[in-house]
Length: 237
Image 1 (cartoon, one colour):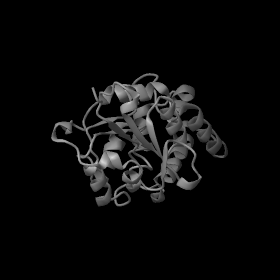
Image 2 (cartoon, rainbow, N blue to C red):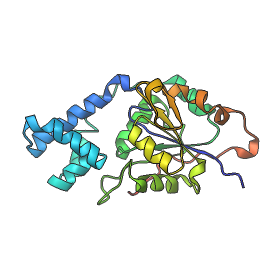
Image 3 (spheres, helix red, strand yellow):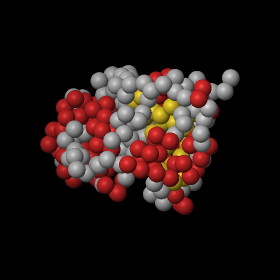
Image 4 (cartoon, rainbow, N blue to C red):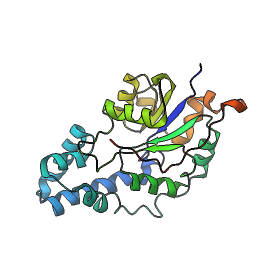
């Protein structure tokens, strides 16, 4: 039996350009939360936030572990407070890329669901995916990329039974390395693709995906078509 491919897409700084500097806005909101809500001295915040990000995959996990912060309060004052309207805009070229991709399409993000869906809607691609695996902030001890458990969770959500059927694009080299170890086919969306040695393929722009994996954009037989699922899928960590 030939397994149908499943393409997993990271969301932030991947589906939309990192040139929009959303990451910088996010970092600013996180550091403001450290200071204003947790009471961490301003001169200690940058180093601590970077340490949490590197150690736990998400700053929130470090804040929960060491300061027992309320994840919904964090989401409200960080992710949902980002001024994304008018910054992230409809991407017609991305829509065409996704519509031409002949396999199941799945969003796989470390963000909580409201932020991910907001980004997809602003890009105009909320109806182009078969499902969404997000990080459930409400799940005690939740996992996230690059932990192996999060990749296995995404496979389960998407109905993947073999790593060989899984394709993945992400801007994080750490996440790409983790997926490649599991046997996924990986594409690193790098700051400079010519200088990246992460993943099976490297690109500078999400629109370039068909150039490195053209076989996934070639016409398929009618019996290979997939029925679209709802993006409203829920998932636990």
